[in-house]
Length: 194
Image 1 (cartoon, rainbow, N blue to C red):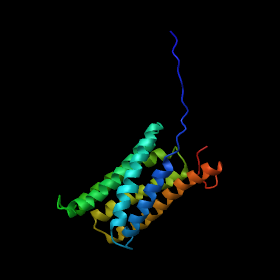
Image 2: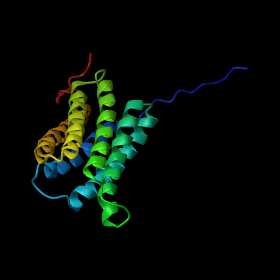
Image 3: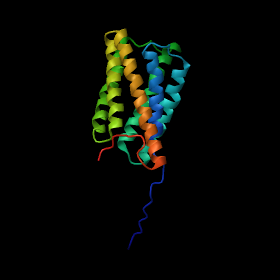
Image 4: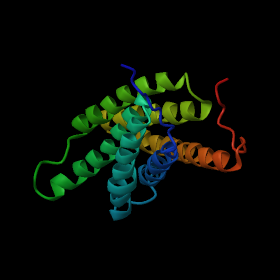
């Protein structure tokens, strides 16, 4: 008995630009705060829940559908990072738990630094733009972790500037993918691997 196999072409859009922009815009806003320009407020928290959080989780699910393990792991994880970070801020305000001590916050951010290091290693097989995004996110997490361990305002501010650069590099990478797809040629370089 002969089986008929039907192969269906994947005609779905590339979800990565949405995830990169969600990560990037939210990262820039938070790190403008970390650099000392304004306090944490509802603009950062709302972006953290919606665009940095929910949008990236959805992108991770779309990457799963496209059979992209790296994209699924990265976008879903960072989306949940943003949601968990907002929970770290809001749960104590709601009286549900104590505010984190600097040491525990340093551990939290350090674990994300370790996780990001492994994703950065994966980007060495991808394009240069993603390498910049993930390298700077590693620096950002470890910088913020150290700023908590040592309770150093200076390291915190320096990390904020690294985070601003990281966020803009993610925005560039996401928008470059959109522009290059629309124009069907590389207008915004990504440093693609040959």
